[in-house]
Length: 171
Image 1: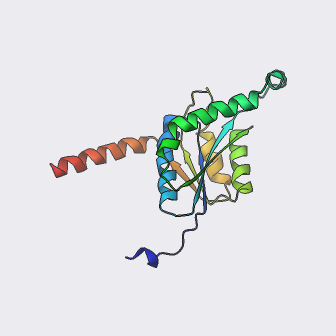
Image 2: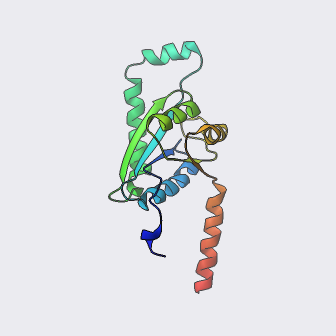
Image 3: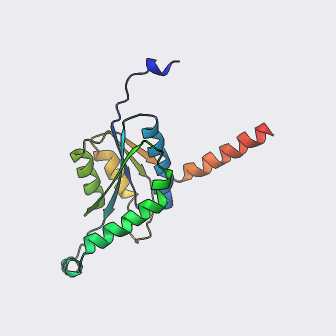
């Protein structure tokens, strides 16, 4: 079937949510694949920094000089190491971060930016010590204003097993 026979893609802007966990890193490949197949589609990476719940910590953290600047620098560094090298040339790739309640900020961002698809890992635990996926994924999938592609980390094992079988069949 000729590609021209397919209707235009409904995806103009894909949101990839990350906590920098192995599951998020695996899910990123699905987000990249989605935009790579749709010329002109934007891929935005979003990381949500948790806002401390206790008023004491909020006050303390906001008194520390340049906390947002330092957090953004750490995120930029992680994105440059883990994600930028995997973005194909020509893909419009953007990075955003928010501070607050993870699933709420993801949903707000999706609404504000008119996101057409959210790509998110099912479970993960970041190096920052915060759990972003699990309940977050379920809440985003249930309340998002657009489709949500949920990537379980276990699927990576299934793909690896499939590759082994394909390789064995060729030998």
